[in-house]
Image (cartoon, rainbow, N blue to C red):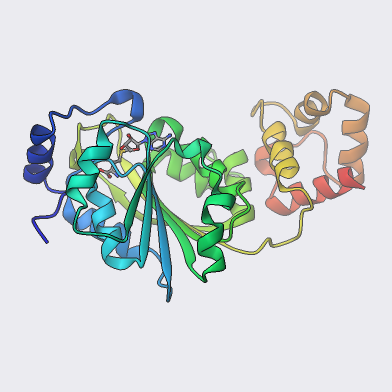
Length: 284
Ligand code: SAM
């Protein structure tokens, strides 16, 4: 293997050779620290037959390390200009497949079906484009594909929200929905200096280990919408937010009462189980 792509010298060399400039509109901040990409790849849980999905391979810094630990890698890249670059930088890894596509438009269930049928265990790893971190994660969580883990770099501030516990300032709809689907672990904090170009904020890598639903909720999307609805105006009471969500204050009161939730509470004080209870009452 040549010198790792995730070094300043190789990154500059590749960018110059291909006349590349990073694009802000695609959230391009390339990683230039080999120990970090290695650690991300190595923190993905082991499996006998492993398919790793990457979102936004860039010039291949992380992809290269994923290729070393996986049986198959599929990386989705939106930027036309990066496709020939990746064909070049990853040429020595035939088990890496680059798909030129906006990840938000990928039908994961359909595209990954052949691998699921073939006994692959699927995990996701990425240095996410920060402008769409949350939509990308929801796209995965709502995909109904049996994914083992998601190990991703994001802004540290956003990572803190995903991992937040009830009653803390960072706790929000994301925390509830995430904790419904996964155990969340902080893998490492990453200083802004290791990216080209340097972003304004520090980053963190967090890992979601997806688990079978703790309690069955019949329609996951509906449950997620309800949770989001309860947090729409953070400073307002759950009654207030639920009334707006349902467009019916009397119904909101009735449901809260049945679920034994004080209408004066705020959503940030409600645990995952409380939301599940509310959802179940509403579904009866
Ligand atoms: N993985 C590379 C690294 O760590 O150096 C690049 C990470 S950079 C933060 C984000 C990458 O995601 C860029 O390559 C960008 O073009 C790509 N990207 C942005 N939006 C995307 C989308 N909707 N679907 C797929 N890739 C996207």
